[in-house]
Image 1 (tube, helix red, strand yellow):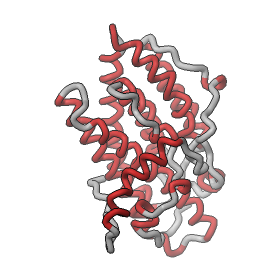
Image 2 (spheres, rainbow, N blue to C red):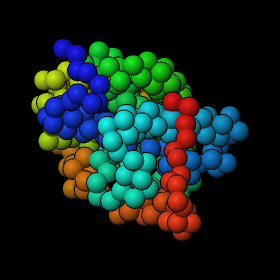
Image 3 (cartoon, rainbow, N blue to C red):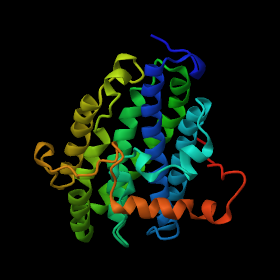
Image 4 (cartoon, rainbow, N blue to C red):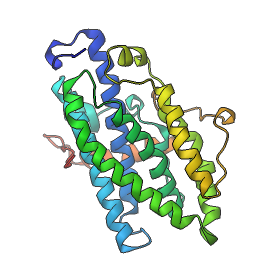
Length: 270
């Protein structure tokens, strides 16, 4: 199956494509907004440069997906600057504030997210919507670097005095990470139209098969997934934690304060 471009989609096809694109774009944009909070505060110059580059990559990936939404008729304002915060569908994992000064929080979040993102990109390589499939290779290459960076730091933090913080970060963030795989109303159409070649429920199991053994190899106790109480706000259905509304107000502040005639365009080299 191969769908044509944005001008020839049926209502059903467009709704499925939009759900997929908004989820990907919103995840990438919000996680990047959180990462930039660590610029100049990372524990080494090398890690400072790395987290800055990762944030730039994620903004670039968001740009790729928002551009496809704009090809379907959305404006920059509707995608970002004037959008109702309750309309955003990112996972609540990426909107969580960092524990102050806790680098383990950054690294655990990055690892849990980047493993999921890598899996998500792999099942878009053969997407039936060519504009998505054409962009996946670039994203995959960069996400693999992000994952390797997180794994390297997890191994460094797993020893000695940092292990306790590592465990605390996993305990805190793991339930939010499970919301990455919460299905939306168009999940069945996304799969049946072959926009994505696997269901989110299957990706969740693949993700668990990767992250649980790795974390346990570092003597980190991982909660039993089926026994975890998911947060009330998953993000995927527009429900969010208070932290999101504060963050959204911060990154749209300049746009609203300056009352710009032309919207600020998200930049990135995705």
